[in-house]
Length: 457
Image 1: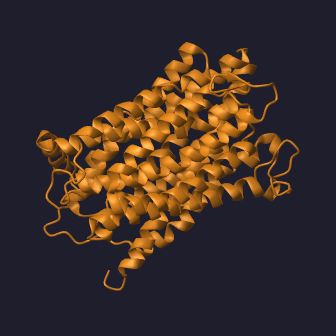
Image 2: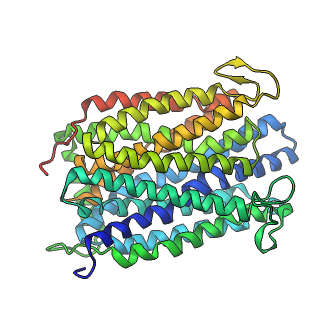
Image 3: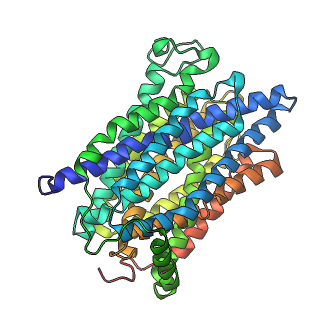
Protein backbone atom coordinates (compact mmCIF):
# COMPACT_ATOMS: atom_id res chain seq x y z
CA UNK A 1 0.00 0.00 0.00
CA UNK A 2 3.10 2.24 0.27
CA UNK A 3 2.92 2.94 -3.47
CA UNK A 4 -0.77 3.87 -3.38
CA UNK A 5 -1.24 7.51 -2.44
CA UNK A 6 -4.09 8.77 -0.27
CA UNK A 7 -5.54 10.53 -3.32
CA UNK A 8 -5.57 7.29 -5.32
CA UNK A 9 -7.28 5.47 -2.43
CA UNK A 10 -9.99 8.12 -2.29
CA UNK A 11 -10.57 7.94 -6.04
CA UNK A 12 -10.58 4.17 -5.94
CA UNK A 13 -13.22 4.37 -3.20
CA UNK A 14 -15.25 6.83 -5.30
CA UNK A 15 -15.34 4.33 -8.15
CA UNK A 16 -17.42 1.90 -6.09
CA UNK A 17 -20.23 4.46 -6.03
CA UNK A 18 -19.81 5.04 -9.78
CA UNK A 19 -19.82 1.30 -10.51
CA UNK A 20 -22.68 0.28 -8.21
CA UNK A 21 -25.09 3.20 -8.67
CA UNK A 22 -26.74 1.77 -11.84
CA UNK A 23 -28.31 -1.02 -9.76
CA UNK A 24 -30.26 1.67 -7.94
CA UNK A 25 -30.80 3.93 -10.92
CA UNK A 26 -31.42 1.48 -13.76
CA UNK A 27 -32.61 -1.63 -11.99
CA UNK A 28 -34.43 -0.61 -8.84
CA UNK A 29 -36.06 2.65 -9.86
CA UNK A 30 -36.21 3.75 -13.47
CA UNK A 31 -35.91 0.85 -15.94
CA UNK A 32 -36.25 -2.68 -14.60
CA UNK A 33 -38.66 -1.84 -11.77
CA UNK A 34 -41.24 -0.27 -14.14
CA UNK A 35 -40.59 -3.07 -16.67
CA UNK A 36 -41.36 -5.66 -13.99
CA UNK A 37 -44.57 -3.81 -13.08
CA UNK A 38 -45.72 -3.52 -16.70
CA UNK A 39 -44.88 -7.12 -17.56
CA UNK A 40 -46.42 -8.55 -14.39
CA UNK A 41 -49.53 -6.40 -14.95
CA UNK A 42 -49.91 -7.67 -18.51
CA UNK A 43 -49.59 -11.28 -17.32
CA UNK A 44 -52.26 -10.73 -14.65
CA UNK A 45 -54.62 -9.09 -17.13
CA UNK A 46 -54.18 -12.04 -19.49
CA UNK A 47 -55.17 -14.20 -16.53
CA UNK A 48 -58.47 -12.36 -16.28
CA UNK A 49 -57.74 -9.67 -13.68
CA UNK A 50 -59.08 -6.13 -14.04
CA UNK A 51 -56.39 -3.65 -15.22
CA UNK A 52 -56.52 -1.42 -12.13
CA UNK A 53 -56.36 -4.40 -9.79
CA UNK A 54 -53.53 -5.93 -11.86
CA UNK A 55 -51.43 -2.76 -11.53
CA UNK A 56 -51.92 -2.74 -7.78
CA UNK A 57 -51.10 -6.46 -7.52
CA UNK A 58 -47.90 -6.03 -9.56
CA UNK A 59 -46.80 -3.24 -7.21
CA UNK A 60 -47.59 -5.51 -4.25
CA UNK A 61 -45.48 -8.36 -5.74
CA UNK A 62 -42.56 -5.94 -6.11
CA UNK A 63 -42.96 -4.81 -2.52
CA UNK A 64 -43.04 -8.34 -1.12
CA UNK A 65 -39.98 -9.33 -3.14
CA UNK A 66 -37.99 -6.37 -1.84
CA UNK A 67 -39.17 -7.09 1.69
CA UNK A 68 -37.74 -10.62 1.54
CA UNK A 69 -34.39 -9.33 0.25
CA UNK A 70 -34.38 -6.69 3.00
CA UNK A 71 -34.94 -9.28 5.73
CA UNK A 72 -32.05 -11.37 4.39
CA UNK A 73 -29.73 -8.36 4.44
CA UNK A 74 -30.87 -7.34 7.94
CA UNK A 75 -30.10 -10.76 9.40
CA UNK A 76 -26.66 -11.23 7.87
CA UNK A 77 -25.21 -7.69 7.68
CA UNK A 78 -24.04 -7.17 11.27
CA UNK A 79 -22.80 -10.76 11.58
CA UNK A 80 -20.62 -10.52 8.48
CA UNK A 81 -19.42 -7.09 9.56
CA UNK A 82 -18.32 -8.50 12.91
CA UNK A 83 -16.53 -11.40 11.20
CA UNK A 84 -14.73 -8.99 8.87
CA UNK A 85 -13.62 -6.77 11.77
CA UNK A 86 -12.28 -9.82 13.60
CA UNK A 87 -10.17 -10.79 10.59
CA UNK A 88 -9.26 -7.29 9.42
CA UNK A 89 -10.22 -8.31 5.87
CA UNK A 90 -12.88 -6.56 3.79
CA UNK A 91 -11.74 -6.96 0.20
CA UNK A 92 -12.46 -10.72 -0.08
CA UNK A 93 -16.04 -10.03 1.02
CA UNK A 94 -16.37 -7.27 -1.57
CA UNK A 95 -15.17 -9.70 -4.26
CA UNK A 96 -17.79 -12.25 -3.14
CA UNK A 97 -20.71 -9.84 -3.12
CA UNK A 98 -19.59 -8.23 -6.35
CA UNK A 99 -19.99 -11.65 -7.93
CA UNK A 100 -23.58 -11.85 -6.66
CA UNK A 101 -24.23 -8.36 -8.06
CA UNK A 102 -23.01 -9.34 -11.53
CA UNK A 103 -24.79 -12.72 -11.60
CA UNK A 104 -28.10 -11.34 -10.33
CA UNK A 105 -28.15 -8.39 -12.71
CA UNK A 106 -27.01 -10.39 -15.72
CA UNK A 107 -29.62 -13.11 -15.21
CA UNK A 108 -32.46 -10.60 -15.65
CA UNK A 109 -31.93 -10.85 -19.39
CA UNK A 110 -34.09 -13.99 -19.13
CA UNK A 111 -37.29 -12.16 -18.12
CA UNK A 112 -38.97 -11.90 -21.52
CA UNK A 113 -42.75 -11.30 -21.44
CA UNK A 114 -43.40 -14.50 -23.38
CA UNK A 115 -42.28 -16.73 -20.50
CA UNK A 116 -42.22 -14.20 -17.66
CA UNK A 117 -41.96 -15.60 -14.13
CA UNK A 118 -42.59 -13.26 -11.21
CA UNK A 119 -40.74 -15.60 -8.85
CA UNK A 120 -37.58 -15.96 -10.93
CA UNK A 121 -37.48 -12.26 -11.80
CA UNK A 122 -37.69 -11.32 -8.13
CA UNK A 123 -35.21 -14.05 -7.14
CA UNK A 124 -32.42 -12.89 -9.46
CA UNK A 125 -33.16 -9.23 -8.82
CA UNK A 126 -32.90 -10.00 -5.09
CA UNK A 127 -29.56 -11.81 -5.55
CA UNK A 128 -28.10 -8.76 -7.29
CA UNK A 129 -29.60 -6.40 -4.73
CA UNK A 130 -28.15 -8.40 -1.84
CA UNK A 131 -24.74 -8.36 -3.54
CA UNK A 132 -24.90 -4.60 -4.01
CA UNK A 133 -26.03 -3.89 -0.45
CA UNK A 134 -23.39 -6.10 1.20
CA UNK A 135 -20.59 -4.75 -1.00
CA UNK A 136 -21.72 -1.26 0.06
CA UNK A 137 -21.48 -2.16 3.77
CA UNK A 138 -17.86 -3.26 3.48
CA UNK A 139 -16.93 -0.35 1.20
CA UNK A 140 -18.51 2.27 3.49
CA UNK A 141 -16.40 0.95 6.37
CA UNK A 142 -13.28 2.28 4.61
CA UNK A 143 -14.51 5.90 4.92
CA UNK A 144 -12.84 6.68 8.30
CA UNK A 145 -9.51 5.42 6.90
CA UNK A 146 -9.62 7.85 3.96
CA UNK A 147 -9.06 10.92 6.14
CA UNK A 148 -8.07 11.37 9.80
CA UNK A 149 -10.11 14.62 9.80
CA UNK A 150 -13.72 13.87 10.76
CA UNK A 151 -14.94 17.11 9.14
CA UNK A 152 -13.24 16.28 5.86
CA UNK A 153 -15.08 12.96 5.64
CA UNK A 154 -18.32 14.82 5.00
CA UNK A 155 -16.86 16.28 1.81
CA UNK A 156 -15.39 12.92 0.76
CA UNK A 157 -18.71 11.15 1.35
CA UNK A 158 -20.66 13.84 -0.53
CA UNK A 159 -18.26 13.86 -3.47
CA UNK A 160 -18.33 10.06 -3.63
CA UNK A 161 -22.11 10.02 -3.69
CA UNK A 162 -22.12 12.78 -6.35
CA UNK A 163 -19.67 10.76 -8.44
CA UNK A 164 -22.01 7.79 -8.12
CA UNK A 165 -24.95 9.87 -9.29
CA UNK A 166 -22.89 11.04 -12.25
CA UNK A 167 -22.33 7.38 -13.12
CA UNK A 168 -26.05 6.75 -12.82
CA UNK A 169 -26.79 9.69 -15.14
CA UNK A 170 -24.35 8.46 -17.78
CA UNK A 171 -25.67 4.90 -17.55
CA UNK A 172 -29.26 6.15 -17.95
CA UNK A 173 -28.31 8.28 -20.94
CA UNK A 174 -26.60 5.31 -22.57
CA UNK A 175 -29.67 3.12 -22.02
CA UNK A 176 -32.34 5.51 -23.30
CA UNK A 177 -30.19 6.96 -26.09
CA UNK A 178 -28.88 3.69 -27.52
CA UNK A 179 -31.02 0.79 -26.30
CA UNK A 180 -34.49 1.71 -24.96
CA UNK A 181 -37.01 2.26 -27.75
CA UNK A 182 -40.08 4.47 -27.60
CA UNK A 183 -43.50 4.07 -29.20
CA UNK A 184 -41.97 4.67 -32.65
CA UNK A 185 -39.43 1.88 -32.19
CA UNK A 186 -36.55 4.36 -31.99
CA UNK A 187 -34.33 5.36 -29.08
CA UNK A 188 -34.15 8.93 -27.79
CA UNK A 189 -31.18 9.47 -30.12
CA UNK A 190 -33.33 8.41 -33.09
CA UNK A 191 -31.64 5.02 -33.59
CA UNK A 192 -32.96 1.52 -33.67
CA UNK A 193 -31.85 -0.28 -30.49
CA UNK A 194 -28.22 -1.40 -30.73
CA UNK A 195 -27.32 -5.00 -31.56
CA UNK A 196 -30.70 -5.52 -33.19
CA UNK A 197 -32.50 -5.82 -29.82
CA UNK A 198 -36.15 -6.51 -30.57
CA UNK A 199 -38.67 -4.22 -28.81
CA UNK A 200 -41.40 -6.82 -29.36
CA UNK A 201 -39.66 -9.24 -26.99
CA UNK A 202 -38.63 -6.29 -24.77
CA UNK A 203 -35.01 -7.16 -25.42
CA UNK A 204 -34.26 -3.44 -25.57
CA UNK A 205 -35.44 -3.14 -21.94
CA UNK A 206 -34.21 -6.50 -20.61
CA UNK A 207 -30.71 -5.58 -21.79
CA UNK A 208 -30.49 -3.29 -18.77
CA UNK A 209 -29.61 -6.37 -16.66
CA UNK A 210 -26.46 -7.51 -18.46
CA UNK A 211 -25.45 -3.92 -19.21
CA UNK A 212 -25.61 -3.09 -15.50
CA UNK A 213 -23.50 -6.18 -14.75
CA UNK A 214 -20.88 -5.21 -17.35
CA UNK A 215 -20.80 -1.61 -16.13
CA UNK A 216 -20.09 -2.78 -12.58
CA UNK A 217 -17.41 -5.27 -13.61
CA UNK A 218 -15.52 -2.67 -15.68
CA UNK A 219 -15.69 0.27 -13.29
CA UNK A 220 -14.80 -1.71 -10.18
CA UNK A 221 -11.30 -2.15 -11.61
CA UNK A 222 -9.99 1.15 -10.12
CA UNK A 223 -11.48 0.22 -6.75
CA UNK A 224 -9.67 -3.11 -6.61
CA UNK A 225 -6.47 -1.51 -7.95
CA UNK A 226 -6.23 1.20 -5.29
CA UNK A 227 -8.04 -0.09 -2.19
CA UNK A 228 -6.17 -2.26 0.30
CA UNK A 229 -7.03 -3.64 3.69
CA UNK A 230 -5.14 -2.01 6.55
CA UNK A 231 -3.17 -4.68 8.44
CA UNK A 232 -4.74 -5.33 11.82
CA UNK A 233 -2.62 -6.53 14.76
CA UNK A 234 -3.65 -9.93 16.11
CA UNK A 235 -6.20 -10.35 13.35
CA UNK A 236 -8.07 -13.65 13.43
CA UNK A 237 -9.08 -15.88 10.56
CA UNK A 238 -12.66 -15.78 9.37
CA UNK A 239 -14.45 -17.24 12.37
CA UNK A 240 -18.22 -17.05 12.29
CA UNK A 241 -18.51 -17.96 15.96
CA UNK A 242 -16.17 -15.18 17.04
CA UNK A 243 -17.99 -12.72 14.81
CA UNK A 244 -21.31 -13.63 16.37
CA UNK A 245 -19.88 -13.36 19.90
CA UNK A 246 -18.39 -9.94 19.13
CA UNK A 247 -21.69 -8.79 17.66
CA UNK A 248 -23.59 -10.06 20.70
CA UNK A 249 -21.30 -8.07 22.96
CA UNK A 250 -21.80 -4.97 20.83
CA UNK A 251 -25.58 -5.34 21.02
CA UNK A 252 -25.44 -5.80 24.80
CA UNK A 253 -23.36 -2.62 25.05
CA UNK A 254 -25.75 -0.54 22.91
CA UNK A 255 -27.76 0.85 25.89
CA UNK A 256 -24.50 2.40 27.11
CA UNK A 257 -24.38 4.41 23.86
CA UNK A 258 -27.79 6.12 23.63
CA UNK A 259 -26.75 8.43 20.80
CA UNK A 260 -25.79 5.47 18.62
CA UNK A 261 -29.04 3.69 19.49
CA UNK A 262 -31.10 6.78 18.66
CA UNK A 263 -29.27 7.29 15.37
CA UNK A 264 -29.70 3.68 14.32
CA UNK A 265 -33.41 3.99 15.07
CA UNK A 266 -33.78 7.34 13.34
CA UNK A 267 -31.92 6.33 10.20
CA UNK A 268 -33.84 3.05 10.20
CA UNK A 269 -37.06 4.94 9.59
CA UNK A 270 -36.02 7.79 7.33
CA UNK A 271 -33.80 5.62 5.09
CA UNK A 272 -36.60 3.09 4.81
CA UNK A 273 -38.96 5.88 3.73
CA UNK A 274 -36.43 7.16 1.19
CA UNK A 275 -35.91 3.68 -0.23
CA UNK A 276 -39.69 3.38 -0.56
CA UNK A 277 -39.75 6.57 -2.65
CA UNK A 278 -36.87 5.36 -4.82
CA UNK A 279 -38.27 1.89 -5.22
CA UNK A 280 -41.82 2.80 -6.10
CA UNK A 281 -41.28 6.12 -7.89
CA UNK A 282 -40.92 4.53 -11.32
CA UNK A 283 -43.81 2.16 -10.68
CA UNK A 284 -45.94 5.13 -9.61
CA UNK A 285 -45.13 7.08 -12.77
CA UNK A 286 -45.90 4.03 -14.88
CA UNK A 287 -49.14 3.01 -13.17
CA UNK A 288 -50.67 6.32 -12.03
CA UNK A 289 -49.39 8.83 -14.59
CA UNK A 290 -49.12 6.18 -17.35
CA UNK A 291 -45.60 7.18 -18.36
CA UNK A 292 -43.53 5.10 -20.78
CA UNK A 293 -40.24 3.59 -19.62
CA UNK A 294 -38.42 6.02 -21.91
CA UNK A 295 -40.14 8.97 -20.20
CA UNK A 296 -39.36 7.48 -16.79
CA UNK A 297 -35.71 7.29 -17.88
CA UNK A 298 -35.68 11.04 -18.60
CA UNK A 299 -37.21 11.58 -15.16
CA UNK A 300 -34.38 9.49 -13.73
CA UNK A 301 -31.72 11.57 -15.48
CA UNK A 302 -33.18 14.75 -13.99
CA UNK A 303 -33.28 13.19 -10.51
CA UNK A 304 -29.71 11.91 -10.79
CA UNK A 305 -28.32 15.24 -12.05
CA UNK A 306 -29.96 17.13 -9.19
CA UNK A 307 -28.64 14.44 -6.83
CA UNK A 308 -25.07 14.85 -8.07
CA UNK A 309 -25.17 18.63 -7.75
CA UNK A 310 -26.67 18.67 -4.28
CA UNK A 311 -24.43 15.88 -2.98
CA UNK A 312 -21.48 18.17 -3.67
CA UNK A 313 -23.25 21.12 -2.04
CA UNK A 314 -24.41 18.97 0.88
CA UNK A 315 -20.88 17.65 1.36
CA UNK A 316 -19.56 21.20 1.74
CA UNK A 317 -22.35 22.08 4.19
CA UNK A 318 -21.55 18.85 6.07
CA UNK A 319 -17.87 19.80 6.27
CA UNK A 320 -18.76 23.27 7.61
CA UNK A 321 -21.63 22.47 10.01
CA UNK A 322 -21.59 18.69 10.39
CA UNK A 323 -24.03 16.09 9.05
CA UNK A 324 -26.94 16.76 11.43
CA UNK A 325 -28.33 19.96 9.81
CA UNK A 326 -28.12 18.33 6.37
CA UNK A 327 -30.05 15.26 7.56
CA UNK A 328 -32.82 17.31 9.22
CA UNK A 329 -33.28 19.66 6.26
CA UNK A 330 -33.38 16.81 3.74
CA UNK A 331 -35.97 14.86 5.74
CA UNK A 332 -38.26 17.91 5.81
CA UNK A 333 -37.92 18.39 2.04
CA UNK A 334 -38.69 14.71 1.45
CA UNK A 335 -41.84 14.83 3.62
CA UNK A 336 -43.12 17.69 1.47
CA UNK A 337 -42.15 15.81 -1.70
CA UNK A 338 -43.95 12.63 -0.63
CA UNK A 339 -47.13 14.63 0.01
CA UNK A 340 -46.79 16.25 -3.41
CA UNK A 341 -46.47 12.86 -5.13
CA UNK A 342 -49.47 11.42 -3.30
CA UNK A 343 -51.56 14.37 -4.49
CA UNK A 344 -50.75 13.84 -8.17
CA UNK A 345 -53.03 12.14 -10.67
CA UNK A 346 -53.36 12.77 -14.42
CA UNK A 347 -56.14 15.26 -13.60
CA UNK A 348 -55.11 16.76 -10.23
CA UNK A 349 -52.21 18.49 -8.45
CA UNK A 350 -52.18 18.97 -4.67
CA UNK A 351 -55.69 17.49 -4.68
CA UNK A 352 -56.93 20.33 -6.92
CA UNK A 353 -58.44 19.31 -10.26
CA UNK A 354 -56.73 20.55 -13.43
CA UNK A 355 -58.10 20.51 -17.00
CA UNK A 356 -57.94 17.15 -18.76
CA UNK A 357 -54.78 16.90 -20.81
CA UNK A 358 -52.96 19.48 -18.66
CA UNK A 359 -49.18 19.09 -18.54
CA UNK A 360 -49.04 20.35 -14.94
CA UNK A 361 -49.22 16.88 -13.27
CA UNK A 362 -46.26 15.69 -15.36
CA UNK A 363 -44.31 18.89 -14.68
CA UNK A 364 -44.89 18.59 -10.93
CA UNK A 365 -43.75 14.95 -10.97
CA UNK A 366 -40.54 16.09 -12.66
CA UNK A 367 -40.16 18.67 -9.87
CA UNK A 368 -40.73 15.91 -7.32
CA UNK A 369 -38.05 13.81 -9.01
CA UNK A 370 -35.54 16.65 -8.82
CA UNK A 371 -36.33 17.12 -5.11
CA UNK A 372 -35.99 13.39 -4.41
CA UNK A 373 -32.63 13.29 -6.17
CA UNK A 374 -31.31 16.40 -4.44
CA UNK A 375 -32.52 15.72 -0.90
CA UNK A 376 -32.15 11.94 -1.11
CA UNK A 377 -28.56 12.04 -2.32
CA UNK A 378 -27.42 14.60 0.24
CA UNK A 379 -29.29 12.71 2.97
CA UNK A 380 -27.57 9.42 2.21
CA UNK A 381 -24.11 10.98 1.91
CA UNK A 382 -24.41 12.82 5.23
CA UNK A 383 -25.97 9.77 6.89
CA UNK A 384 -22.95 7.70 5.88
CA UNK A 385 -20.66 10.32 7.39
CA UNK A 386 -22.80 10.55 10.55
CA UNK A 387 -22.28 6.82 11.06
CA UNK A 388 -18.51 7.32 11.20
CA UNK A 389 -19.14 9.71 14.13
CA UNK A 390 -21.59 7.43 15.92
CA UNK A 391 -19.87 4.07 15.45
CA UNK A 392 -17.04 2.43 17.37
CA UNK A 393 -13.85 3.46 15.53
CA UNK A 394 -12.24 0.13 16.44
CA UNK A 395 -15.02 -1.91 14.83
CA UNK A 396 -16.22 0.21 11.93
CA UNK A 397 -17.26 -2.62 9.59
CA UNK A 398 -19.42 -4.04 12.36
CA UNK A 399 -20.80 -0.54 12.95
CA UNK A 400 -21.75 -0.25 9.30
CA UNK A 401 -23.22 -3.74 9.56
CA UNK A 402 -25.43 -2.41 12.37
CA UNK A 403 -26.17 0.58 10.15
CA UNK A 404 -27.26 -1.81 7.42
CA UNK A 405 -29.25 -3.80 9.99
CA UNK A 406 -31.04 -0.63 11.08
CA UNK A 407 -31.71 0.17 7.45
CA UNK A 408 -32.82 -3.34 6.57
CA UNK A 409 -34.41 -4.54 9.80
CA UNK A 410 -37.31 -2.36 8.75
CA UNK A 411 -36.42 -2.21 5.05
CA UNK A 412 -39.23 -4.68 4.54
CA UNK A 413 -41.61 -2.32 6.37
CA UNK A 414 -41.84 0.40 3.71
CA UNK A 415 -42.31 -2.08 0.83
CA UNK A 416 -44.63 -4.21 2.98
CA UNK A 417 -46.67 -1.21 4.17
CA UNK A 418 -46.89 0.06 0.60
CA UNK A 419 -47.83 -3.41 -0.63
CA UNK A 420 -50.50 -3.90 2.07
CA UNK A 421 -51.87 -0.36 1.71
CA UNK A 422 -52.00 -0.81 -2.06
CA UNK A 423 -53.80 -4.13 -1.62
CA UNK A 424 -56.31 -2.68 0.86
CA UNK A 425 -57.06 0.52 -1.05
CA UNK A 426 -56.65 -0.94 -4.53
CA UNK A 427 -54.82 2.31 -5.36
CA UNK A 428 -51.19 2.78 -6.31
CA UNK A 429 -51.42 6.46 -5.35
CA UNK A 430 -52.70 5.87 -1.81
CA UNK A 431 -50.30 2.96 -1.40
CA UNK A 432 -47.39 5.42 -1.12
CA UNK A 433 -48.76 7.19 2.00
CA UNK A 434 -46.80 5.17 4.64
CA UNK A 435 -43.51 6.87 3.69
CA UNK A 436 -44.68 10.17 5.21
CA UNK A 437 -45.08 8.63 8.66
CA UNK A 438 -41.70 6.91 8.44
CA UNK A 439 -39.93 10.20 7.67
CA UNK A 440 -41.63 11.86 10.65
CA UNK A 441 -40.57 9.04 13.00
CA UNK A 442 -36.98 9.39 11.81
CA UNK A 443 -37.01 13.15 12.47
CA UNK A 444 -38.39 12.71 15.98
CA UNK A 445 -35.68 10.23 16.99
CA UNK A 446 -32.92 12.59 15.84
CA UNK A 447 -33.62 14.67 18.96
CA UNK A 448 -31.66 12.07 21.00
CA UNK A 449 -28.63 11.93 18.66
CA UNK A 450 -25.40 13.68 19.70
CA UNK A 451 -23.68 15.24 16.66
CA UNK A 452 -20.34 13.57 17.53
CA UNK A 453 -21.67 10.37 19.10
CA UNK A 454 -20.82 8.57 22.36
CA UNK A 455 -17.42 7.06 21.50
CA UNK A 456 -14.12 8.83 22.03
CA UNK A 457 -12.58 9.40 18.60
